[in-house]
Image 1 (cartoon, rainbow, N blue to C red):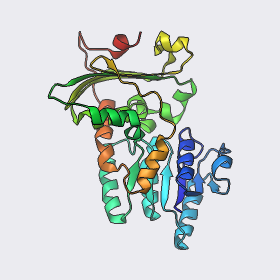
Image 2 (image 1 turned 60 degrees about the horizontal axis):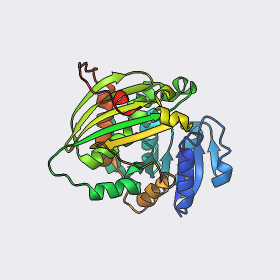
Image 3 (image 1 turned 135 degrees about the horizontal axis):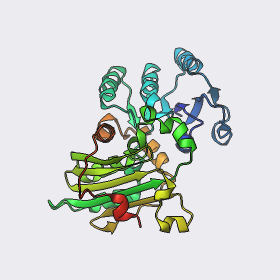
Image 4 (image 1 turned 90 degrees about the vertical axis):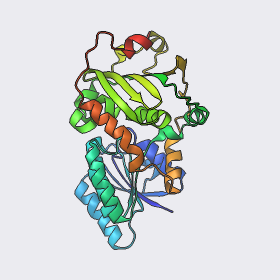
Length: 312
């Protein structure tokens, strides 16, 4: 039975990791979060040791390692800007890391992690769960690339309340902003499907929405991301839905709304089998998100605006 530690256990995404650890027959022995709203632990691992302070958590892991009873994996669900430090903690403790997206905010951080990974003999994995979505896998297997670039339009609107802007997620230096925090899974998916990035332009950058254009090897992608519920199309509002997800490929809707509940478990199964997603897998989308975050706005008279084109 593999032993796990976990950082960020009070966060939004942590329950999916807790479930995945339990579903794979593993054991969670120690968790960290400065916020003590961690009652969800009762549903999964009530006997796990809980720490509010990083220093005490680190000392506990070090004591376990000294007694030859250290953790095998550290799952990282903490705020984005802490991922790099928590990955390095895992390697110091002789453990593999399983890190939520994005693995890091800046591409050059991957270079050091790659070096440390090689020296430690342990592995750094990420959670790219859309690559485990059966509809997306089927689409990739059936995709016929005949030299003609596909026309792709990505629209993702996921409503967030006023709290968002006051949390770490609303601080671009900590989260990477909307394109990184909200969009990186979709950017990874599109690169995985249509090949590497040739060119990228940004047409709109605001606190709660952003849009642009990406030329991939086999696709031209117009994209729009938002956390403002006012951007939701009327069809979603009438159904009282808070999230709208649409991907058009050559004007055909690519449907993958269902099938998300077990994806983290599938990622964990693959990771424990030695088939997880590593630094090489995450690098292209992290580089793209970084470039989008640091790009100048391109102003064009006829620049496509996905919000106007696809959300009715």
